Structure formats: structure tokens, C-alpha cells
Image 1: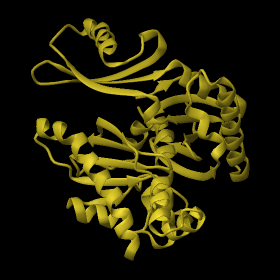
Image 2: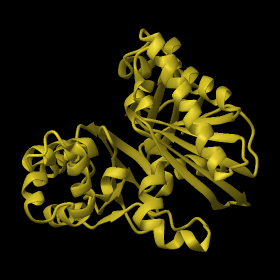
Image 3: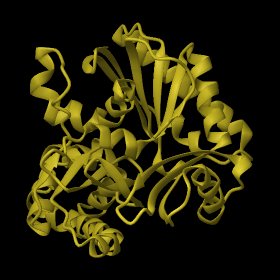
Image 4: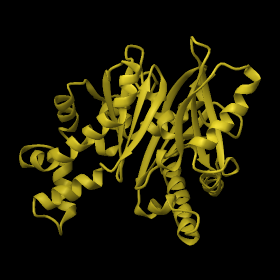
Length: 349
């Protein structure tokens, strides 16, 4: 589900604007086969104001310029040539919900969805872009997945793309980008944890369809801060960060970090309990992505605590240069999965 604005070409960019870094991938396609041609990332705190409210206009302008400059920098340094772009929008800037419609005539569906949207979205219809998908069920009811992106967020990305000299094809919620990276042929329900610098997005995806999303405060920066306190490095977070990246959850670090991870697991469980009980299904895998997911020992700890298979996001169904193979699971897959998923929108029918 995304908001299509332009036509499609054979080479394109996927762009993921986070609260601390920007990831850009360049991909090509031949038929439905997508190939990762290039990728790059730049970290900068100057973009942290990108998601402020519209009433902080001056800070927003500065953040938009910093974001555009960062995107241009990555494109130039990596030698990317594509100008058609697919942007992913952070979940916390959007609204997502699901609901059912009773049996009705096909021509009544759109007006019914728009009417229901007023009940679920805390903004007026004129203030958002709406998109939805509909599944018809056996009893002739319809299951609707609805996403809304505020107009000001859409306009913000359009201004950034213009400053970069890019054609913006699609804007979509990051959970939809992530689900496109999953290979769910043998899985019924996957829970994706996208662990970033300032928070974690959790999504339940069943048979390729997004069912539930939730956001928690667990983040890479939170782990660093807690580790700094626990190791008496409160005034030396750089050293704490180095210890986090090299040692992860080993030794004393595990005692310090474990309570934060336990809370993350608890929130995941609470968030999806009602959905899973209603659907009489079980989570079959947990998939980790985002820079914070690469904390050494985190994957093993989550698997141990939940008893659920836990892996890193690795979109191995795409083609990529041979030199990328050794980095696909350890770096490219987890860190660039949102950008890759956004770019893969172009391979849709």
C-alpha cells in the first residue's frame, strides 16, 4: 500500500529517512527480478527534527534541507544514477488500522471505508491521504486494512525530493516496505522488530499481509544510555557505545541490558495477544532489522527468552553483487531492509 505519484522505470532508488540516519539503495529490475546495484548510509543528528509538527516551521525547514543534503551526499558518493525514488515513511508519522465491513454491494465499499475512516483516524479526511486494501471473507464480509498519511508529511517528502532533483514515485508506511522483504512461503505469522536509534517498530505480518503495528521506546540510544549508567560511564557515552558494539550482551553487560529487552518482549506479547487469540494462531518467527538489532547477543537472547525462531532480515530473493553476499545478513539485510522494501514496490504488478 502506497501513494503512487509518477510512472515506473527500470532503475530506481529506495530511501529510508530515520531519526538519526538516512539509507539509500539503488536497484534495477528485469521483469519481476530486482537487483541491488548500490547502497549507502549517512548518519547525522541534523535530521532529527524532520518529524516535528508543522508549527515549528523554522526547525522543519532546516531539517528538510539537512535531509535533502544528506540524500544528495549519499547518491553522489555512491555514484548512483537513478532519479526515480520510492520513499518509506516512519510508522509513527502515519495511522494504520484494520476493521471489517458487513456484506454489501461492491459500489458501496469505497464510501463505507471512508465513513469508517472517520471513526479510526484522528484527523479529518481532508487532512490525510488515504489508502486501503480489502480482503473478501467466506461470509461475504470484507476485511479492510487502512493507512492514512497526513498531508503535511506527504508535502514534506515532496519538498525534500524536489531539493534532491528526484522524481518521487511512491510514499509508503515502513511496515509495508518491511513486509515486502520477508519470504513467508513457509511461515504463517512473522513479527518484525525494526530497532532504530530512537524507538522500535513492531509489526505482525501474516501470509504477506500486515495485521498489527506497534511502537515501543526500546532503541539503540536507550541501550547505550543504560549501559553507560551500569558501567559508570555516564559522562563517557562514546566509550559505552564502543563497548556495546564490541561486547554486546556479554558478561555484566547482559545483566544491564536484559531488563530492557525483557520489556521489549513483554510489549510485543501484549500488543499481539488479542490478535493472536482471536485468530487462534501462533507467532512462528521473529525477524530483526534496523541498526539496533545488530547488538551482539540480542538475537540469541530473544530466541532464548521467547522460544521462537529469531533471525535477521535478509531479502535473499533479490540479486546482488557477489561482494555483498558476506554482508547481506550481518549488515545490508538488517540495516537497509526498509529502503530495499520501498524500492521493491516497483516490482509489484
